Length: 88
Image (tube, rainbow, N blue to C red; front, side, top):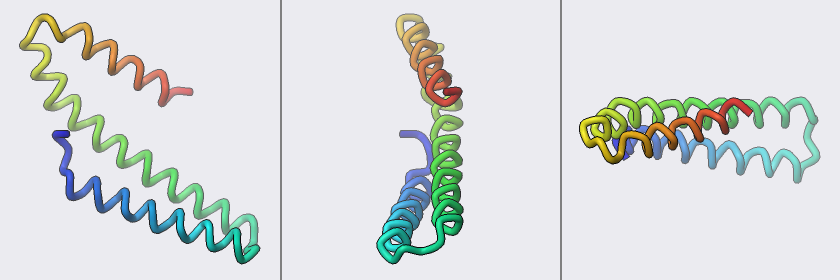
């Protein structure tokens, strides 16, 4: 992975902490809107982390594959598949 691993790991660990907090909120029967807001915050952090990883992929992996003719279409197909998933 070409993205800043330290930054990615920190973000993912933060999300893990948020999820643990959400689980506690549900177990403690806290206010639904508060729980929902925490879920939205976790989703936003996951999305921004995914964006960081995909930007690095475009700048490094994809750029490198374009110099190697055989991998070009495969990498384009991979990127199209992930864009399709994001757009759902």
